[in-house]
Image 1: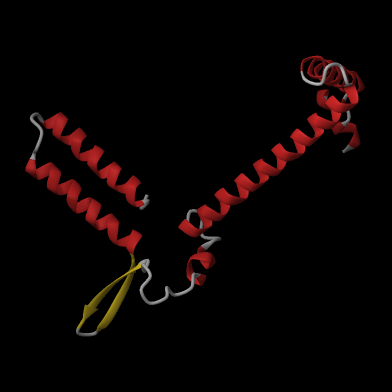
Image 2: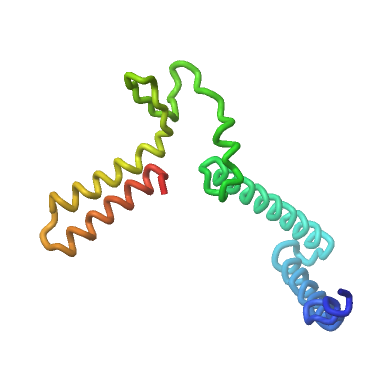
Length: 155
Protein backbone atom coordinates (compact mmCIF):
# COMPACT_ATOMS: atom_id res chain seq x y z
CA UNK A 1 0.00 0.00 0.00
CA UNK A 2 2.84 2.39 0.81
CA UNK A 3 4.36 1.65 -2.58
CA UNK A 4 1.18 2.69 -4.37
CA UNK A 5 -0.05 5.62 -2.29
CA UNK A 6 3.27 7.31 -1.54
CA UNK A 7 4.27 7.09 -5.20
CA UNK A 8 1.12 8.84 -6.44
CA UNK A 9 1.41 12.52 -7.41
CA UNK A 10 -0.45 14.10 -4.43
CA UNK A 11 1.90 12.41 -1.93
CA UNK A 12 5.25 12.99 -3.63
CA UNK A 13 7.73 15.14 -1.66
CA UNK A 14 7.90 17.65 -4.53
CA UNK A 15 4.13 18.06 -4.48
CA UNK A 16 4.13 18.55 -0.73
CA UNK A 17 6.83 21.21 -1.06
CA UNK A 18 4.80 23.05 -3.74
CA UNK A 19 1.75 22.91 -1.48
CA UNK A 20 3.68 24.28 1.50
CA UNK A 21 5.05 27.11 -0.66
CA UNK A 22 1.56 27.97 -1.90
CA UNK A 23 0.17 28.00 1.63
CA UNK A 24 3.05 30.20 2.81
CA UNK A 25 2.40 32.67 -0.04
CA UNK A 26 -1.31 32.73 0.78
CA UNK A 27 -0.64 33.37 4.49
CA UNK A 28 1.79 36.14 3.57
CA UNK A 29 -0.77 37.80 1.30
CA UNK A 30 -3.44 37.47 3.97
CA UNK A 31 -1.08 38.98 6.55
CA UNK A 32 -0.33 41.94 4.27
CA UNK A 33 -3.98 42.62 3.50
CA UNK A 34 -5.71 41.85 6.79
CA UNK A 35 -3.33 41.74 9.77
CA UNK A 36 -0.87 44.50 8.73
CA UNK A 37 2.00 42.04 8.20
CA UNK A 38 1.59 39.98 11.40
CA UNK A 39 2.20 36.39 10.21
CA UNK A 40 1.38 34.71 13.54
CA UNK A 41 -1.95 36.55 13.78
CA UNK A 42 -2.70 35.69 10.15
CA UNK A 43 -2.00 32.00 10.82
CA UNK A 44 -4.19 32.09 13.91
CA UNK A 45 -7.10 33.80 12.13
CA UNK A 46 -6.91 31.45 9.14
CA UNK A 47 -6.88 28.39 11.40
CA UNK A 48 -9.89 29.70 13.32
CA UNK A 49 -11.73 30.39 10.06
CA UNK A 50 -10.85 26.94 8.75
CA UNK A 51 -12.09 25.32 11.97
CA UNK A 52 -15.36 27.29 11.88
CA UNK A 53 -15.88 26.48 8.20
CA UNK A 54 -15.34 22.76 8.78
CA UNK A 55 -17.76 22.83 11.73
CA UNK A 56 -20.34 24.69 9.62
CA UNK A 57 -19.98 22.22 6.73
CA UNK A 58 -20.29 19.26 9.12
CA UNK A 59 -23.43 20.72 10.73
CA UNK A 60 -24.95 21.43 7.32
CA UNK A 61 -24.30 17.89 6.11
CA UNK A 62 -25.77 16.40 9.30
CA UNK A 63 -28.82 18.64 9.05
CA UNK A 64 -29.39 17.56 5.44
CA UNK A 65 -28.92 13.89 6.31
CA UNK A 66 -31.39 14.09 9.19
CA UNK A 67 -33.89 15.91 6.97
CA UNK A 68 -33.57 13.19 4.34
CA UNK A 69 -33.99 10.51 6.99
CA UNK A 70 -37.17 12.12 8.27
CA UNK A 71 -38.58 12.39 4.76
CA UNK A 72 -37.68 8.77 4.07
CA UNK A 73 -35.27 9.59 1.24
CA UNK A 74 -32.35 7.65 2.62
CA UNK A 75 -32.94 4.42 0.75
CA UNK A 76 -34.81 2.71 3.55
CA UNK A 77 -32.26 3.18 6.32
CA UNK A 78 -34.08 6.04 8.03
CA UNK A 79 -37.58 4.65 8.14
CA UNK A 80 -37.10 4.23 11.89
CA UNK A 81 -37.03 8.01 12.45
CA UNK A 82 -40.37 8.40 10.70
CA UNK A 83 -41.96 5.76 12.92
CA UNK A 84 -40.51 7.12 16.17
CA UNK A 85 -42.11 10.57 15.90
CA UNK A 86 -44.28 11.13 18.96
CA UNK A 87 -48.04 11.37 18.66
CA UNK A 88 -49.15 14.97 18.48
CA UNK A 89 -50.68 16.49 21.56
CA UNK A 90 -54.38 17.41 21.46
CA UNK A 91 -54.86 20.73 19.70
CA UNK A 92 -51.65 20.50 17.69
CA UNK A 93 -51.50 19.89 13.96
CA UNK A 94 -51.38 16.22 13.13
CA UNK A 95 -49.24 14.83 10.33
CA UNK A 96 -51.81 12.07 9.78
CA UNK A 97 -54.96 12.15 7.70
CA UNK A 98 -57.71 10.01 9.25
CA UNK A 99 -60.54 8.46 7.22
CA UNK A 100 -63.38 6.98 9.23
CA UNK A 101 -64.97 3.88 7.72
CA UNK A 102 -67.52 1.40 9.03
CA UNK A 103 -64.61 -0.99 9.59
CA UNK A 104 -62.59 1.50 11.62
CA UNK A 105 -60.20 4.38 11.12
CA UNK A 106 -57.60 4.48 8.37
CA UNK A 107 -54.59 6.69 9.05
CA UNK A 108 -52.51 8.10 6.22
CA UNK A 109 -49.55 10.44 6.30
CA UNK A 110 -50.62 13.76 4.79
CA UNK A 111 -47.70 13.64 2.36
CA UNK A 112 -48.94 10.30 1.06
CA UNK A 113 -52.45 11.71 0.54
CA UNK A 114 -51.19 14.64 -1.54
CA UNK A 115 -49.80 12.42 -4.31
CA UNK A 116 -53.18 11.06 -5.52
CA UNK A 117 -54.59 14.59 -5.18
CA UNK A 118 -51.77 15.93 -7.38
CA UNK A 119 -52.47 13.22 -9.98
CA UNK A 120 -56.18 14.06 -9.92
CA UNK A 121 -55.41 17.75 -10.46
CA UNK A 122 -53.02 16.82 -13.29
CA UNK A 123 -55.70 14.74 -15.05
CA UNK A 124 -58.26 17.49 -14.40
CA UNK A 125 -56.07 20.13 -16.01
CA UNK A 126 -55.40 17.84 -18.98
CA UNK A 127 -59.11 17.23 -19.58
CA UNK A 128 -60.32 20.79 -18.84
CA UNK A 129 -57.83 22.34 -21.31
CA UNK A 130 -57.60 25.81 -19.68
CA UNK A 131 -54.87 26.88 -22.14
CA UNK A 132 -55.24 26.99 -25.94
CA UNK A 133 -53.13 24.50 -27.87
CA UNK A 134 -52.39 20.88 -27.03
CA UNK A 135 -48.69 21.42 -26.31
CA UNK A 136 -49.31 24.51 -24.17
CA UNK A 137 -52.03 22.70 -22.19
CA UNK A 138 -49.79 19.68 -21.61
CA UNK A 139 -46.94 21.92 -20.44
CA UNK A 140 -49.30 23.78 -18.12
CA UNK A 141 -50.57 20.49 -16.66
CA UNK A 142 -47.01 19.29 -16.04
CA UNK A 143 -46.13 22.64 -14.46
CA UNK A 144 -49.12 22.45 -12.10
CA UNK A 145 -48.33 18.81 -11.24
CA UNK A 146 -44.65 19.51 -10.55
CA UNK A 147 -45.54 22.58 -8.48
CA UNK A 148 -47.96 20.56 -6.35
CA UNK A 149 -45.36 17.83 -5.78
CA UNK A 150 -42.74 20.42 -4.87
CA UNK A 151 -45.01 22.46 -2.59
CA UNK A 152 -46.27 19.41 -0.69
CA UNK A 153 -42.82 17.73 -0.69
CA UNK A 154 -44.31 14.49 -1.98
CA UNK A 155 -41.68 13.66 -4.58
